[in-house]
Length: 200
Image (cartoon, rainbow, N blue to C red; front, side, top):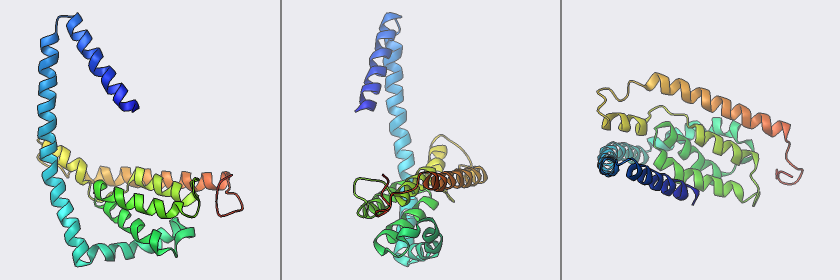
């Protein structure tokens, strides 16, 4: 709702300023250009996203995605010790982490929501430490293949959309590392209540 009000305010303000300065025609032309560019960008991105979603589906059906998820479980068990033996949490959690590694945020989001719902069953109405860590990891998003960013760069005419890989790897490792460290630090500084890991 707040974003709708902000966008409406920006549109009204630009129209008023354009009419006030006698640039109403230029504002209308810019709006049409922006709308056309947005449609072109969406179509360009759709192709690459469909390609990588197809790759993800092939990986899932061939068992590679499941293998990657099983490979990640020991690490995720260290990050989420209270849920390490809970299959209903760990399965979507490992799949979410795998999708994020491949830069498929659209595929990762429903898996993350599923894991978060399972986590919240233990502490209804209150975020436990594991849920906070999940939010941090999904926000920082460790990525091996930045599919979405590369598709935006390709749509903008970049000849080598994946030449940002070293910078993306460094930035995502740093952001995830700092995020997890902060999450664990705050969990120690603000300990959970005695009952069920629920914060007081």
